[in-house]
Image (cartoon, rainbow, N blue to C red; front, side, top):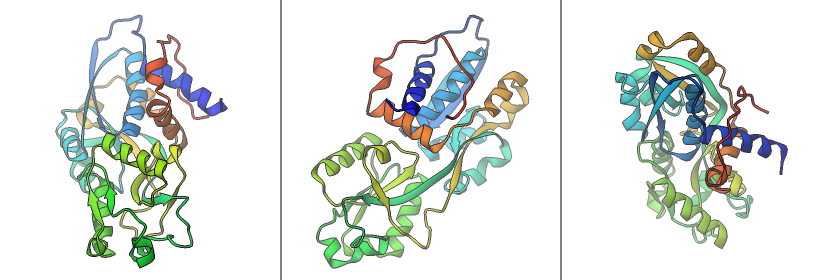
Length: 283
């Protein structure tokens, strides 16, 4: 097993199956995360840190448009995760009531991609999807994610700008499980397809995907993922907990690997609880 995979397996064992602390849990924290798997594994890291420091954690999940208002009005104390560029429409509405705890990972990205078995000489850019010879082979249904996500909002702009709907392509919102099943089926059959994706995401670990050029950058450029607190939580949280949250630092590579271990290797089903916990460091 690769050294990073071994390290993450141990990390996930502790995070996913955190054992109760030796001291009473007296503080209550509501943690929210978008219900996509790479957000979930990242949130498990935050949850484990909170619980090990004596906090009782309740978790709320939902879509972007459901969770950002809860951060804004204080119904959730901590949120995983704000992408300042991709989520700008939502973030602008709540940032005055929020405090950034830490950058969970840098180099977050949104993009459209095709499998690397689709020749780059034929499909290198989004504009190439309109070529007659490409359209003859490419799946016309483009599977997206939550309709209110930054990925889908930007993808709708791509559809309009490049006239893809006029040539028979459709952008279809999907629940994560449906989208992932469709992805796996297409890869197994070696079909030509294009998919809106993010970095991190375990699907980029399952198959080699080539990012398509899109010079107008409707999905933005490099972004980052922030752990954000409501200002009322920041005002009352104890210093020890806040300092621990500030020290959480992962990476796109680490989150992608954790996402892969949980979704593909079923790590959460096979591990027993571990009592040891070490400070979080990226390898």
